[in-house]
Length: 180
Image 1 (tube, rainbow, N blue to C red):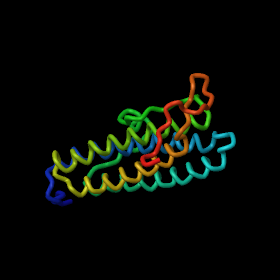
Image 2: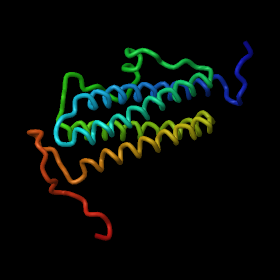
Image 3: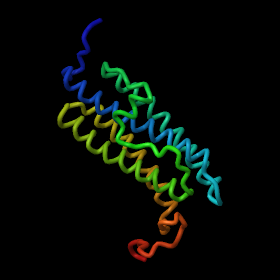
Image 4: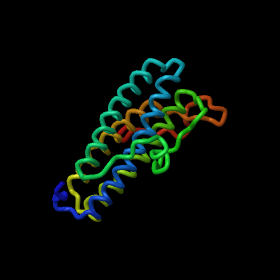
């Protein structure tokens, strides 16, 4: 089989593949967490969150496939085991916990924001360090999708705070929109 000749060295391609595999691992952890919350949510927001999380895990599933295909297009192999994902993911599981609905949302916001921060770093490294503008562009698109998902989740709990007893209460430091 001929060597891949797409204008990137093997080291550049491998550097990008490593970044993409970390993004893939985080996507899987986030997918599992989103599905788990989709199954376990209860309370007055059940239907709204159940449907929102279904939309999110469907988008995450598409993104997982796109990440794996990008890795293959660069000549690499995607991580494909749960053990492998957990070893390189920056996100952590919350096994055995079934938090209340707003805490579920807050956990997912934190995870999406971590993914967004990772994407920002990976976009920069892909373009500047590895000279792979195609992957930088690809990751920018994924980052924007996570920004939208995080915004949707933040909007759900905006103006609410969780006290240590896990009860919802009005936030004392709610933000007032500009111009209001």
